[in-house]
Length: 144
Image 1 (cartoon, rainbow, N blue to C red):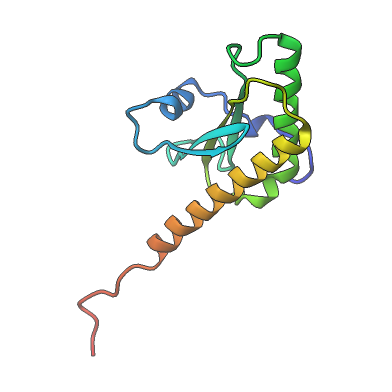
Image 2 (image 1 turned 60 degrees about the horizontal axis):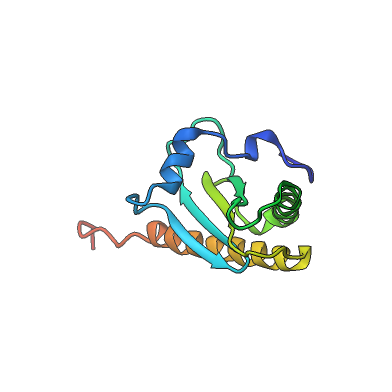
């Protein structure tokens, strides 16, 4: 996928994957907070359709009452993700849910900063876990 647009394959639509992401008993789902957003994420190796990160945006009606404002915040989060997804590895199947937690509307700059912080933290954790798996201890049966 080359280009700046958001492709349909990048949107998290699977009910099973969304359920696993929001399952409280699932230890694989991790959380990152960067006000005014919170992100739940997990590596989904069982995904067959795409090997790229997939995301969804949730703006709760309890926090933002008017539909016009929810749509505005959803567009801001999607735009921030679209412009900053290059901070993130494209070959790892990660599911991300961005959840808006503020009660008031935020400007685009605040949303953008939060998305950048979230993506960089997830990237840092992914690189730490992949470096641990790549650096396996030496085998005890090595010839001298």
